[in-house]
Length: 539
Image 1 (cartoon, rainbow, N blue to C red):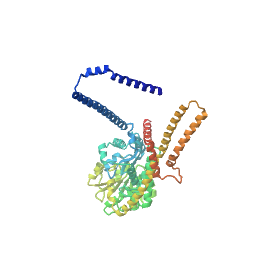
Image 2: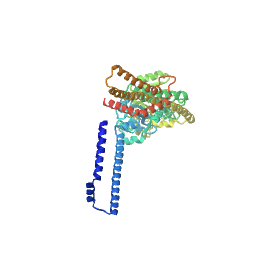
Image 3: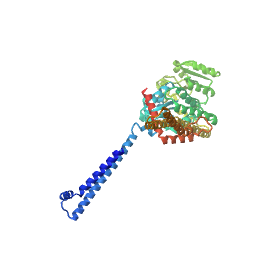
Image 4: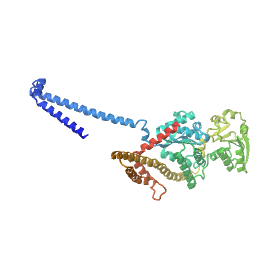
């Protein structure tokens, strides 16, 4: 290489010298004078100026071309960064909740999106089959239909889930967008914690919602797509709900939806008493059972219960031995409705049990003047057209808002106490969630340093020529020892194995993010998630 460089320098010098000799020769001068012809000094000066301007123009043009080339290269690099391959590295995976509830959508929209519990695992699988969804869970009650997901991209995740909701319900995306709500990350977590604590319910502190959140976790276990982050989210929500109820006693003085339904009907009765009222309960499931218990607590001593089978009614009858509970099969529902003053409906039927034409044909055999229907089912068991009749008065879950009126100050005080607990548990969850990132960070850091060690070892060995196996092992051991020493500090601060000197979560996260930035590990971690998603999609 030195010889080549020397030869190039000698050749360049020789060429320069020969050109200098040529310019000094009389023949060259003669040819130059003949070409340009004699010029006076002024014309020569003007020509010299024009030549200088031309040279400067060429120089500026070359400079502009270089700048344009540089700018175009930068633009090409930016386009590459914005390409589909790199789009995931711009944002971390997010926890998102997309849903409709009693505060944002009327019951006629919500009932179209209702997903039975038995179909929740299938819904999770369908959601996780979407391109940008890693994990998912479905929380459906009479007051809400909420989809919780871990998405690789916020915008694309929301779009895919909204389109999926439209597909399963038949509700156009434009209509869903009018009623849906969306929350991200901490806001989504806080929302679920408030739901589990009963703060987002019509009746503050209702106990049934916590059982429904527990059911989400129970049904999700073992389902592909109900993984660590979503599972941990619901686990922390259950812990929060329990703490709120224990430490604030928020459930005292508050009622469930079933209790609110019983209280609403009581408010509409002429004498505000169930002592002489004929009561019919249709459905003996969870909600129906609670209605029956609350009726008994409010002084109802006799009622008719219509259900598909008698087993559940027999169990309730055994629990409430002082109450006369008469079982009737579903085939006798209309006959029972004729003799009822108040009818509670709480079945999982997807089609209405009572329509306008049904009620019109029923004889009016009640002293109240109107039959009172309290429908706490979603989808509704009583068609909305029934309320058009003068002989019927219909209330659904949306009307239960009227029940919540007493002890406002006490409820607000308890809610404030509950939110303080929720904020505390939110910090615990965020620290736990972020600590999950330490595992891929440790793996990626180790792999990153291992690549450097292996590459440098190969370079070193290739330069050393023939050496003994013993010498090779010594060099290999040296490289491994150095890597372990380099890793020791970061590993000690990233790991938390229950030691007393373990880093605080916030300190550990700061160190982890610093390591990710220094070694550009976040991009690799995100791309790993993308690869995992692609592999799952292929399967």
